[in-house]
Image 1 (cartoon, helix red, strand yellow):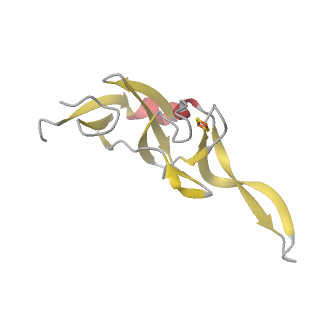
Image 2 (cartoon, rainbow, N blue to C red):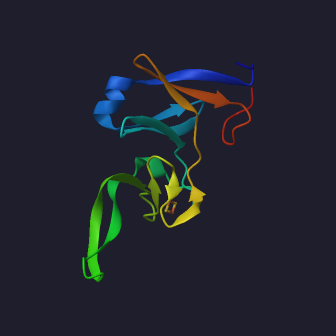
Length: 135
Ligand code: FES
């Protein structure tokens, strides 16, 4: 690992599994750490819309439009497994696994490299990541 990056244990996996989401501060920058569908993800807690604290928003099932057998509109429903993070400022939604806005994939959350080792959830902080101080 270069001097320009370092790894930090930000959570215990068992605690993250139970709580589903943790918001932590690393080097003065807030991150949201998520456990969903057996995967761990980390996102900057900065909404791409207007900079709101997106990772403090509700976690909701993704809304889908259903189609009846006669091919007519069956109305909205919740997806059984997909989850979105809903920004508390203006309601933009982001897929918890990809960080992308469901209907505007060009808009998304900024990812932070994260891995699990044993029970430790570890993020990698690089000095060249926007929002982090250089090292
Ligand atoms: S700042 Fe997140 S939706 Fe506007």
